[in-house]
Image 1: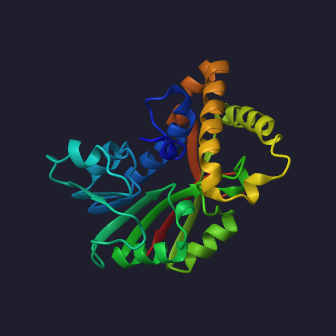
Image 2 (image 1 turned 30 degrees about the vertical axis):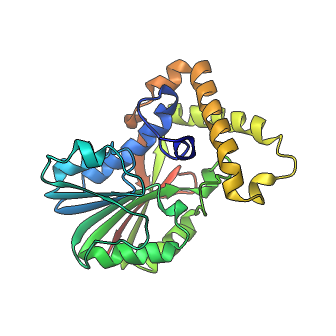
Length: 258
């Protein structure tokens, strides 16, 4: 993976990524309790969600902008398919053909979010469900040049409810260990952003800021890991939990029914 993809793609192979990796993993653990039949994952990334989701499904379709090892490693598994495509639209997916759509940390990257959600509704069967996460802007520490926009809980509900009949708003939360890391990260990020005296993160072109953002983001995570190794390495998905949405959730966890 090149540097321009690294900031938004967490991996369990880098110890400094453990906290964010476990935060993503809890979403997959929760989704695995819900999915079945034909499940489409949009934004499958490095594919670490496959082990959680595919065994629950009769057919699992992974869709991602980038070609990954999914398309090679899982060729022999009959229930796993891989589609490389940019979204929206959801090319190659027929109307009313999917029981569940899982899309984690994707919506914030989509320019036309309404079209994206309408495409998900299109491919879902009647009573099919969308399971989605996206960052809660109220808990974001700095503006990411990779994100088109982020949402507060009210905005999240409003945009999803425009496309779906039933919307259940939940959130991803962390225990004391997770929030200790969050507060350390907040202070560390503040030390970096204090040098942005011209508030460039809010007005400079996003493409221009991506490389420096990636470099500083990686530096910051490695610094936190080096100075707090025990805390960073010992956080697991069990230190996160999902409950009814509140303003202080780290991520929105939405379950919407067609």
